Length: 242
Figure (cartoon, one colour):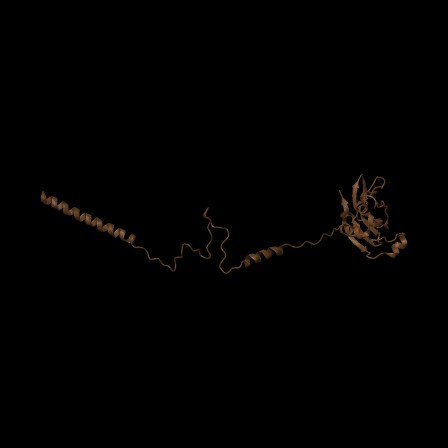
């Protein structure tokens, strides 16, 4: 019995030694650290120059890639320039409501003789009583001098805007469809009133009626109170109102 026991004990010792050797051989490779190639492995704190940024929330690549080193954004500028080139400058409308015929900067002696009017003193009162103050307004609002409206089966040709600035005018003449311009009466200017150019009861109406859609071409002549003149020609399409 003793011999059997000794044989079994010896076999157990040899088995344990074999297991230890196998475990040592298996774990040995894990204990040896792989050499780090410093030249090839970048620092984790640094980002490669051409890397694509990754969103920390979604983990997806950003749509915009990083700009390579040395780039000054020239490509973006060129792209913006190309886009700008595609935006063409539109020409001015050919349907301008008014086209200047002429404007006389100096007193018209012929008009003075033919109309019986005389040049009035030009004083800047701030109340728009003379051509000195009224002319800049009318020059800036040429498209509003007159208007045409279809109403009640007729064409109504208005000169309301000219009435509003009549204190600097001697006379308004209007010609329709090539006819010779004729005088259109206007109310008198009332400088003694708070609103000298106001239209009062009894001043009449600032329009004339014509057959429906018959007014196509209108010519307007103004005589300012400094005896200068201005002329404009209008077409229906440029001045018709609803």
